[in-house]
Image (cartoon, rainbow, N blue to C red; front, side, top):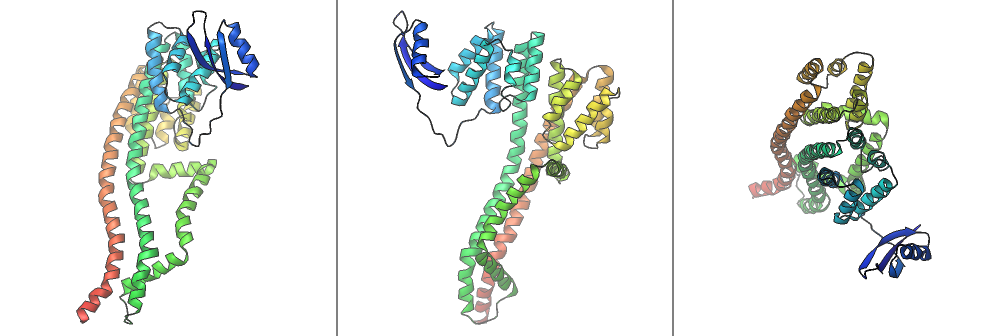
Length: 397
């Protein structure tokens, strides 16, 4: 199948254009003429080479769900909703996605089943909620609830990223500056001090020795951080390596506390959203485990599913894991006993999302003086070690 661009006029003489797929140009022309179009012009769409292809992200999906919810609530047919969204979409990737979903809907497939054909754009949680909304006849309400969930998840993710970007950026810049000083600047001072013929102070000798290593093995200095990142990513791709890395992240000082609270908030928000949509609890736990984002927490959630299937409570394995705070497990236990689990999970999610905000702010405030002290010791130490011989000469003179 090839993609063709066509232009034609309808019986009223109005100009129309579009794209279509067909095996050959002649077949595409015949299809358009059978639709009653005249002055048909068809040409093959040129191949576009895009080194940085657009991708449909969670923000695009969230905006689309809000629009779709509004249109369904207004009584528009589902296929027409997708047609309107397809015309209004700006990203080519989004247009392509909406067109493929619309074509599947026109073939008689349900929306939830169709979305499962696009796992990169629609995750398991989205598909489960849409299917529940279709079955219950409340698709517009479910889409709006899903949109709110995605917006909260994106906000939480952005806060954690912002907390990580600043220290990582400072460390990368400090490493680059230190490497430049060691490879290009310190050797100049070393040659100058060698002409003095006097014994250099110990800090200066250490700095020059380190600089000589940097100059002799610059490829190791430059390549080591890159190889380290690649090694960590390779380890993370293995099941055992990912488990150990995720376990380590949860016990790290400061950062581990932020990630733990974020995981608790994500667990409660996802579980609450699925419960409110009427998804069965065992199926909900499968979806919650898949969207946990941490293998350790995923195992705990799956053990909770097994506990429930055996007639026990949800809180027992959560409490035994030592990952979920006591307050969380106790509130979930109260929700189970009183039949208000959905409401209780929502309150826990609200509380821990605020806790993540506070924890991120505290982490950033704690990081700033630590980073400043680190830069002062490294950069300041290099500068002082290079000026010590000059001070010594000045005192002798």
